[in-house]
Length: 553
Image (cartoon, rainbow, N blue to C red; front, side, top):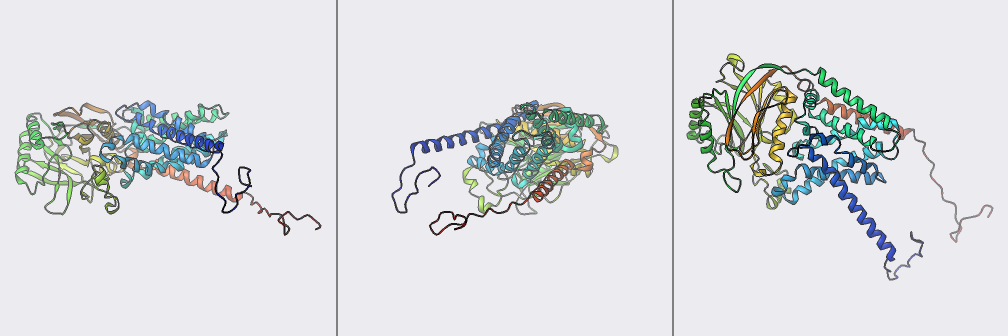
């Protein structure tokens, strides 16, 4: 007999079509599976609304609830893992949707691969929130689920997998208590807080008898946040510095800047007599190596003399002393380039290089992937301004730490520059390719989180917007330059001293999360060892005719 109760088909007999009821049931099951997958992807995409440009920061604390409830309802662990995967796919597409015009279908391929990182997280959700969870399981979920989420964020933060764009904690870039928390444990601690709150709300949204531990857990989370707000050290004021940002803007319908260098010259020359300490140009603001073009170097030095301040420009060009194309932050003073130069270390996958080009080089024919890989810098650099007029630290001038574009998403890079003595962080960026998307706002908001983590102000200067400045606590300084502006902006930037807990202790929330998951694995392993081993079931003996043997025969 087969599984449907019919007779077995003889070998060689012509196949018969499945009964109509079976075909209908299979089609209905397939449609249900597709609908559930679409719902999972949609639920996973919801947290993207907490990021700029919508910037519904408050939504982050409930945005995961529909996804958690869906995984919780899964009928099996396999279904829960699938819900986690498809939700992760939806999340990655939503926070990177502005890449679609450049990478096309390859964006979906990358999102599907990275979405697999959330499959184990789906298993954890099902394990701790599925069915009717006990108070103990709910309490454990408030620690385990944020830890699992942090592990996903840690893995995908590797540059080769796309980097830490869209970390959940970054959505809180304008919330003062969250920024204070970032100074204690970085963006990781804020992400853990957001996931813990979502977990507690998910339990409260059910009718289970486990609401009490959920409420207790949320109260604990609130208490920890309040303690961080009260006891975390605040940056100590240490004078001010006047910084100007030069944003040439977009000048044609195709998103390109016509004669960009000339426009930057014009805007910079208008800053003469403004008593500035530093002028910052955006990423790729100079298209030729200054060693090969002494005429350009001389023109920038003339601008420095006119303005009375050093200029930090960004060169995107082939080098005369080394093979390949580099993106470099170059400091130019009244006498020309000062010798301070930083070569970008972490490159944008597909945008500035193609990983495993021999295997994935076809991406250049599908979208706007890099036709040639740019070269990497070897080390971070802290530069010394020579023309600061005493306000920023006396005769010693000011020490600045430059980053280029994508690098402002990496918490460890700004932390390292701060530990090396940087008093001001600078990010030179260009997002003109994605001018009408959410990308410019999202990118600028990262500077607020980096400033709060390090207790150092940060300047985010771009070619076409959004350019913005944030103080040592992550607070916005002055008004940003939007994507429609071709202008300059001057900022009185507050400086600060002191060391934040995050700069001192680093990514300790991630290490704690790894410890929680390791303890979980050890506990599950010990439980499996204590489980009694069942004896194998021995089938009854059969006669020569195949029927069960009777006792005594």
